[in-house]
Length: 103
Image (tube, one colour):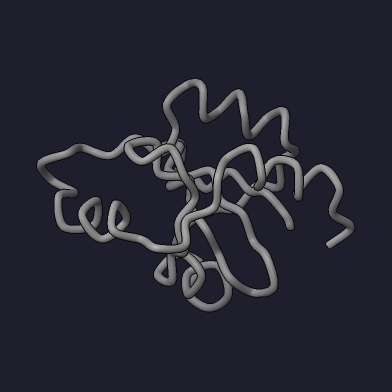
């Protein structure tokens, strides 16, 4: 599993995790990583965003800063979907997998 800081110009957008061609984004509102197919498509094809490889310690620091916090009103539909996600990834698990990954 590889970790990335996703940026749009200078704006910090997501802490993301890539595992076996599946892209997950950390959604601070839920406290978990969720499959984000739109982000995966951007990573592999579109490239409107910038992806900076980071390690688990930097990911934790960015998350503690609030990266990935969405506006509850503007992002209500996406947040409802992610809150109903039956298979989110827990933050400690993602950080541990990234720490031990050679991917």
